[in-house]
Image 1 (spheres, rainbow, N blue to C red):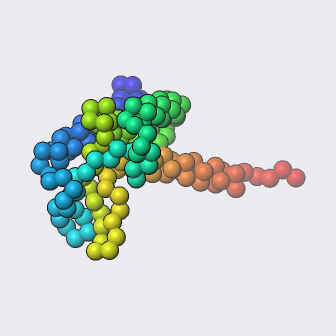
Image 2: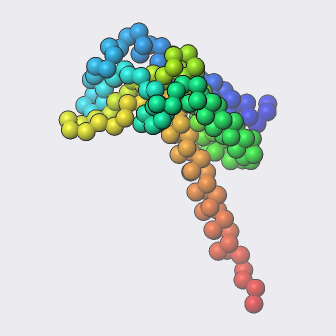
Image 3: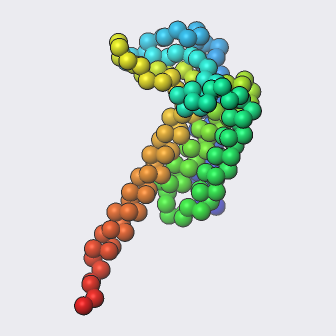
Length: 165
């Protein structure tokens, strides 16, 4: 089995889950009306015409799709350069690619990204997001975790190396 296969499976599963939940949200949730799940978490279907936090919303779907595709190529390149032993980073890159692909599919199909998850209090609300966004965030966290592990291992190996006189 090739070293990349489990990460391809992870990315595919995350992408399928993202698209399935978005399809469900589009037909099951009212548009821009909160549906409480538990305190501080609601379902809230809306459309994001930009990228994170609606940034670049006036750019247009074609330009944002091209930007997303370029970022995905760069992330894939980083993933391919990552050592097979760096499992957290490889899983992180798989999740980042799945999330980016999920949002890119929306942008190409609809001209916007379907968002549906809202975390809030009575006086504050975080940006509405989706599973693809959560995958990108978790993936970035895993890449950072791998870097912290590598940094710590390098620091420990340097501190245990005898110093030359």
